[in-house]
Length: 526
Image (tube, rainbow, N blue to C red; front, top):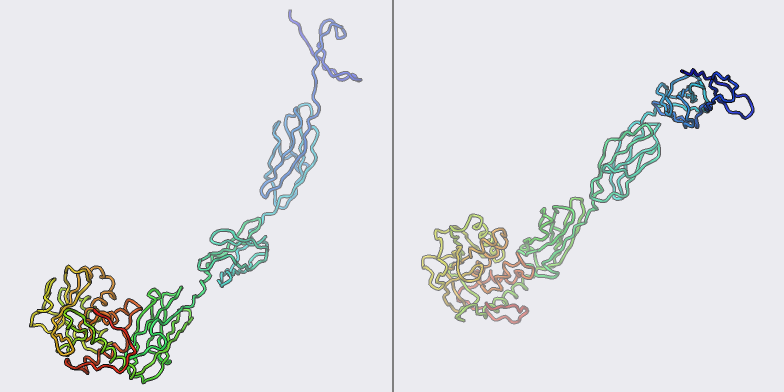
């Protein structure tokens, strides 16, 4: 048998009774044996706080879902249904908006029992008007000075929040609106810096063109000094003047040398070389005191000067030259002891023949070395190529071929540990050693060792050629050429005058008279 059940829903009867439903049965509705089904019913759905956030392109709604029984949510916009979300979805986005417009929203929860639950509180928001980014600055400049780099620009906008300053791509400063300049005092000297200025607001930023600047390194004033002559030195004909200079920030300097304000030298010198000898001609200057001054100028116009005193006294030079000759005539320069340091060439012309084994460059160095000796001794040299190549590593210095009457210079490999050497047959005359020929050998190893040092090679050539001059001791030879390399040596006026006197005023048999007094004391044996 089938039992047909019909269920009647009764509302509340008042009091504290709960809602419930009764099931019909044949015993009747009032039978105490009737079964009952207690079915609870939910209250009206509700929502919590509503938040409305405005963006330039949308309105975003969020609310608290506080009811477990809603079937969904209706979104009311300015009193009109604008959309729905299903249950448990408590966010909604409205893209149907216009800039600058205010919209008000409510959220209505609902279910099948309640078409409208407890409505949320109304919330309103205004869509922002889009912000236009400010115009970029123009006329942007970067100017360097010793105390920093100044930036300036034209402000082309009226809606910027400020300006951002970037240096080499890195933000270094933010300035307020309407600013038109900025000074970077943190920039270092000698370094290039590149800048931009950007106007910005909430709508974006626009940058100026890039400009670069460098704070110059402060100019270093050059320095100059006169190494030789020292104050009060005798000057005679050509006088060697050694100048030292220094400059930190220039590659070249202009150097000027004066005698009593009259310019003698005006040249451009490299700062890297920092030192040089100059020949200053006192030939036409009468006896007296003179000021030698030197000036250097850099590319910035800075100048530095220095001066020293020199004196011309012909009688004093003659007196010291005679003392020098006499002292030299007492020195023995080689064995046997009859070979004196003062020698005389039988022929007045000094001819130097150069072996074809030398290069053209080495030939020119030999010519330059001989010309240097001529300038300071007034003794002429003729330098020319020879048809001879070599006398070998061990020539007989006292039995050279009779068919030569010149100085022969050639490269050779020999066993002695010297850079070069000179030898010549010497004949004894009264008071002098006479020479008519000589050979000079230069070690090949020396030529290779000093291939890149022309001044050193010039010293070697001239030192050996100097041994064929009227005064041949080593000290004299050193004084002749060492000024190229060493400040301790200089060719003194009395040496120069003594060479002239022996060459032009004394015959091979003449005696050197004994001076009445001595004021010099430098003599040296071989």
